[in-house]
Image (cartoon, rainbow, N blue to C red; front, side):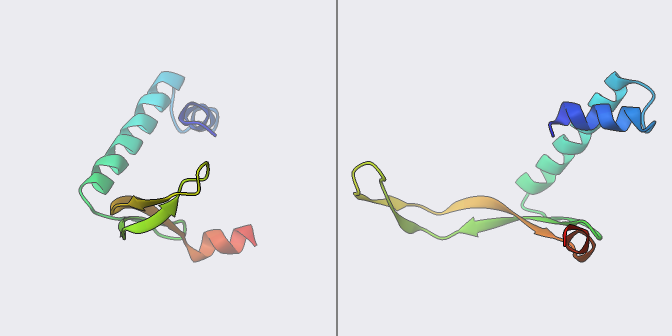
Length: 91
């Protein structure tokens, strides 16, 4: 599902009065989430899950073409932990 599909679905459910409004609001939500994560904060949505920024340690990788070892430095990544209610629905 794309952002456009999400906006269309919310419009069809009657959450927003127009498709354009739905697209703008969905963009605002994702932009806000992005800013929060870029500030190093986490996002917790009860019963759904938690998004948090984690720092990955440096490690050795391998070039699949040549088999040569390559150093991979520290980097930040986003980790998602699903909430119990979401996991229960999936299982």
